[in-house]
Length: 165
Image (cartoon, rainbow, N blue to C red; front, side, top):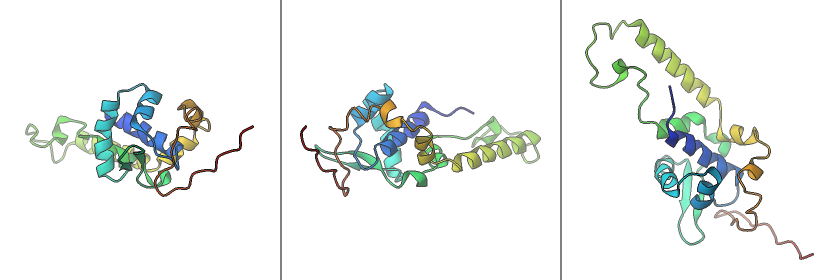
């Protein structure tokens, strides 16, 4: 099984937002960090927003933030929103070619078990787990460089400005 590019970047977008916790993330900044087009990220943003995995704030100072805590968003949550099909064989698909073994097929049973095991593993990992596994993620994503440009997320308190040296 291979996950789509959409799922890959949906996870990356959520990781970026988690690493940028307390601040709104902007699509141009996320696109630059990952070297992908803004248009592609906007396309991914729609199903994530609809599923409540992210929230968007419109306007000049708008951006994107996680829709719930990073430790409450599992990889399975992301995969089920971004993947179109989990048909591992033709017989899994709706309207598939008739097969006389479909109700008693060993392959069908084995593939269903494998798919369920895959889903079980994905439910064990959260976006928070992925971010915490890379202590320098803020640096790697260029978030440290843009600290001065970041704006606090709606409802959060901005850090006080440091006095000039």
